[in-house]
Each structure stands twice: as structure tokens, then as C-alpha cells.
Image (cartoon, rainbow, N blue to C red):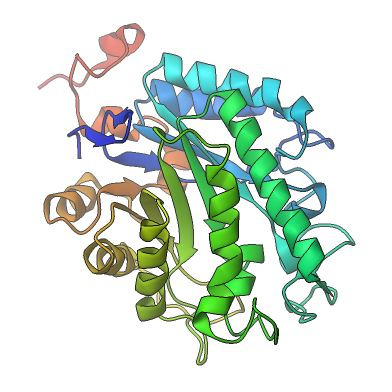
Length: 333
């Protein structure tokens, strides 16, 4: 797990990932604050190899909450750039997840592929083909801003029941045009977003997509579907898959340490792509097992890195890894 990994022009110093986790701490206008500098900067000091900033909205109406980061306006670039520069100064590779919450958004203007409400939310407006093109343009502009802010990796959020996932899943997409029905039609919106993003994102920097591998419900997406989606994304030039699950509708899920790792493993082997595994992973032993057995290329520690930003340092008490300012605290054998 401490072996570097090269992907295009980027060298990741280790295989530990801080996954996107909303901080609900942006300004009303979607701008980054001192909280973000301290929060992400602390994990960089803690030598997390790859930090992915939280879901950052490509449209104001696409925020998951009223306190989400935004990337829908050029005014967001300076604050994001500060976070990038701070984290990179301490050795971390820095990515950003760009997102649109669709029918699960905060606010009154909900949009989706079909006028089907997520339980507890209002009925969304079904996007017309012209409106779909406008949303795709929002993703393209977000990619430009991410490039200008200096991020090393860009991730498209296509999981957890948000807008792209809503197009992918037959449980939320009941369209009868070229964006609905057959598998290739439901995949069309994601591929159009990828193509738009690629027009602005540097070719030598990795592009990632996060997918929900399964919907856990009859008639929903299966791991076989996700492998095929990943193959299509690989063919279009996506470099790294981040594999989560669920979110399209409430479902019974059996949770446990590494419960989503088999999904990442299936994508890695089935689509022959690098993957990030995630799912209640807390111990160095489990991380090492996943990496050493080739089940995934990276392991994301979510809640564990909220509890302990210095997890990596504690997993390897190495003076060459520890910041000089902290070396007086190195464990003594």
C-alpha cells in the first residue's frame, strides 16, 4: 500500500485515498472556506497519497446541500486553487469530484431524466433534449475550471442516485427517446458528459468516474452492467474507476468491512482498468490484503480518515515519511 502508482503524468506516492465526503462548509455562493484548507491540508500533512475533494456542483441547482462547494462559476476557482496548492505542497495528489445531484438536489429546481421523485423529495422536471445539452455544457465548463484551479485528477460523479446515475438506472429512467430504454441509450448521457469534460481536461492528467456498482433492487443496475459501463468508459479514455454502490432508492444492504471491495475487483478484472475500492475499511491489514492480492489499485478510507487524519503515518512509522515537525512523536520500538 506504500508502493507508488503511475497513471498518465501523475505519480501517486501511495495507494491510500481520501474519498469525496461533503463537508457542508462552503459559503452560500459555493466558495471554499478556511475549513476546507484545514480539513484537506491536514490529510496532506498526514501523507494521504490521493485526496479527492467533495462533490462539487457543476450547476447551482445541482448542489447536494445549500452548503456544498461549487464549480459553476469562475469565482470558485481561487478558493479551490488554494486547497490544491496547500495539499500538493505536502506531497498529496489532489483531485476533485464534479457532480450534479439531479432529483436529490437541495432546493426547489429538481431535474432528472424522468419525472419520478426520490422518496421524500418533490417530483423533478424531466429534462428535454435541449436541456440535457445545456447540462452537459455545465460539466464541460466545470472541467475547465478544475483545470484552471490546478487539480491533478478529475472525477465525474455518476453514483449514489445523483443525476448521471439516474440516467443509467432503469429504476429512475423511463424515457422513450435516445436517452432511455435500452442500455446504450441510458449510457448516452454519461458518455456525452465524458466527451465534454475531455475537451477541457488535459490529456496527460487522469480522468476518473465514480459508479454505484449495484442498485440492490430488482430491475436495477447489476455488477454485470457496471463492468459493461466501465468497458465503454475505458474505450472513451477514462483512466480510473471509483466503485461504490447503492443510492438510487432505499434498499437493504449488508454492511461490513470491505463490503464493496468485490465490486471494485470485478471491474478491475472485467474491464481491465485501475480501480479504487471503498467500504468501511479501517485497518492497514485489510488495505494491504486488497492491494497485494490485486483486488484494487487504491483503497479509500472515508470515515476512518475523518477520525484519524494521520492514519498513514501511524501505519508506517518511517522517519522518511513523517513530516520533520512531527518526528519527535515517532513511535519508539
